Length: 357
Image 1 (spheres, rainbow, N blue to C red):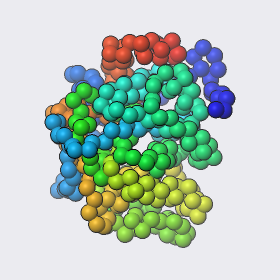
Image 2: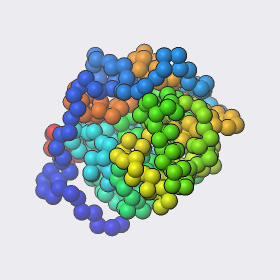
Image 3: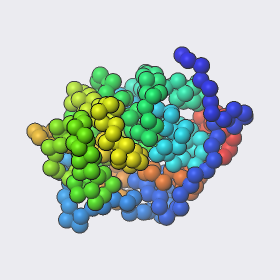
């Protein structure tokens, strides 16, 4: 393994300053599971037509038991976007570390096998320093060293593509509490929920702008993307499934959209690139699933609306700290308490590493 040099030497060399958002902008799915009594917010900037109906999906329910459920939980961490704060909202590295501890420890109770796809810096942090005992570790994201870190979803896409057996990829801001119906997960494609993605570019996906820019230079636009006339994406707070060839095909298309030399002029026209991670990762996934043929799509929630119904999220035992919820210090207080009370040895490691921020 290569020697890793960290950005901030000294006793608190992992620490970074607080880049907070106003608490009114925070949104969390299942926030009460992490922070009892915390005010609930009803969205995070999405544009949804009042009469919009998502495509039908198979919703996993508490008590569901699949004949052959997914047994492998996967996390990924391409460290460069995090270190440069591209698309990352954690107030400090201390809270970021606590999120990894809680996400990993909770899910490892539900899935027999755990895996991490990362780079040398990520390995140093998560395995050597925090001592999280992943069963399988890949350092393949070292190969992304030359890629633009504005593409913070790129590491996730590479992690999806290298899987060879049914899996569930879990973002480190997602917490699967005891009682989450992991035993019921067996969909060809598994995701968090269907999400409205209007082709009109009225929302935050802007698929028409992407397609027009790439077509204007004769770049690579996946047929599935170009032909898709639907208006639904799939939120990938969790993503995976049993259809490994389909998942690898989707990830390969997304990676080629981002990395191919023929598309770089189009992406420069569309900058800032941070705004286009979701269209490549989540809209393309919707196009692959619903653009033609029939795919068994299984979700934790049946609609975007359901994710913000606290009763449903609590029943599903699912929390996702979306975007700026990660920088709300009230959530961070409860994150600290959860890890301190339930995983005290891990908490002490993080506290010694970062200081009690």
